Length: 176
Image 1 (cartoon, rainbow, N blue to C red):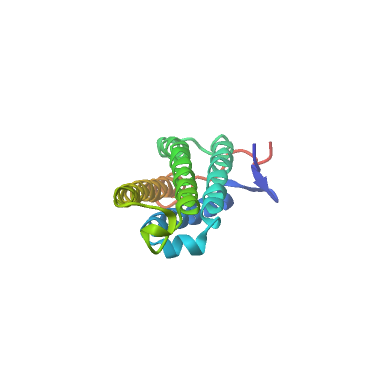
Image 2: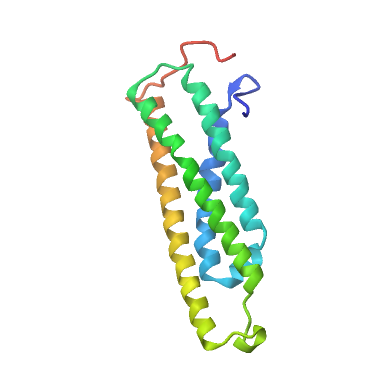
């Protein structure tokens, strides 16, 4: 599915850096775009593109991690880390769906300066306000969930690797 080694080095420890940066970055951009139209205006299409790159990085990293897990000393902490890593994909999907929905809504509705600018009446403004509040709340839920999950995965990975201070080094060769 994706790279398992890069220049003879396991790809997971390298790819995980993309996830550790992209998930929180995307997660922070979501509520910012939902709260402030000026942020959405500046980010534009780059928000769903960032979320898509984040989404693609997650299964690549977990695939490389599963490959690596088969080649190191197995322990309960490693098993827990692997299971938690598999749970990140739904959060990545949530980030992508929310980012795409925010962008699409912004492009479709825009941010008119007056209700008459696009024919909105008072009822439509109330509905738009409710939709915006829902978007902010959903963005916050997905953002916080994704960041917390990435943190917990990283913590479990560090414990699985370093345990009591000594690394759990591979017992077999890294090559397939």
